[in-house]
Image (cartoon, rainbow, N blue to C red; front, top):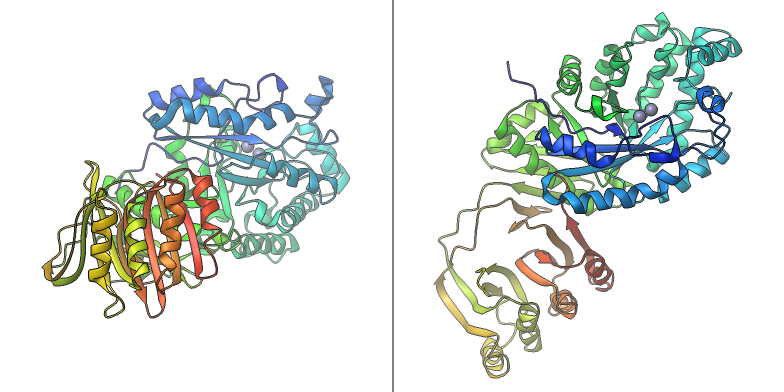
Length: 562
Ligand SMILES: [Zn+2]
Ligand SMILES: [Zn+2]
């Protein structure tokens, strides 16, 4: 039997730091909690904040204290800034995530209010949609008295739950792409019983059972994930949701995320392992967490090698998703696994094998990314092309391409490597017979001599080893690139014609963006480029929007997953 992890990548994590706003949730100092997580050796911590409610949606305890101001508005508005400050303060010591628990308050003012709250939390890693309040103005998770009042209004236990599920479905339809996760799906059990028709919803013909089955199918079809929430266990009513629901969710391939939904630092870290045992019992072998709205796969087992493989998988998922529109990102990709990753074939339903090819391929719509942590073996084939030794600074590669283009020479493939001593080497293969390479070399030796130590065209040469240890982008859409990933990578798909690449390189040179590593590939008339770069995101993204119609795709990929 494999060992479960002691740590979880929480999604519905700790509610904290609402300060003097007097919200009933989360009053602790954020720093204290981060310190506690670091002391426990946790690689990450997840904060979550409730979106502020309208005044008409209040718990009776709040009305009794007669606090009239909008609940938690100030702390909500300040939260992104405070999280950013925390990230700066703690740096590499811990990965800090933060998400929003978005309140459902109906489809009129409540919906517009919620939509505006999304903009006030632009940098959030994820958004959970939760129903806490009935349209009757009474909470599901307030006092027993409030629940009984609602039960009386609705007339029966079945009607009570039916109303809650109607609101859930309406929330999912109205929130659309604003949310990634459904919060505590059987929350009302906190204060009222679960009727038999719901507990055994799988086999029941009761309309409530049918309603609930529909709800789960909607969640599956929309690629949302389900919050497995330990607060229910903490409060003595059992984990949200019950095992029957979770088993069905697994059959429907709904991803789960785990969290303790803790409201006080003294309970931070409680029930971590139990949450993994709980999802395992329902048949899950993994769960998801989120960075910048993109799901990351997490193993439930304490197995170092397996975690390394998940790191590679997550980098691939991030790369592929950042090539897609926001809407496409929600679709769960297809996977292929080969070599040491083959064990994933059994974990991911619908995954296919790739034999001994030691890599992960992630596909969605017409795009794919192939990735591995195995360092490529240098080819022993004799090559023909242009070898360069030059200064490792912005603009040098651009200058080389500039001269080649001026002679009508199109570069077919390229590889670049920094020597980490202020110099770099490159090897370019050129489209044959399409220009005068001798003129180009003479020109550079005449005008750019201080940038280039050596520039020679060789036939029948041995290719030096350009590979170092790292995680490699092996292919993009099946086209070989073999780029070692850095923190930031630019991927393009473009018309493979003379001068097109010069546009990108000149754009980067114009803002002093340094190219650390560079690979070119092509298929038919389409060129592919992958560049590891250093520089400011906003500047790079701005450049990439201006490359012109010969670029079919140009994206800056950043890595947030760990
Ligand atoms: Zn909640
Ligand atoms: Zn919560």
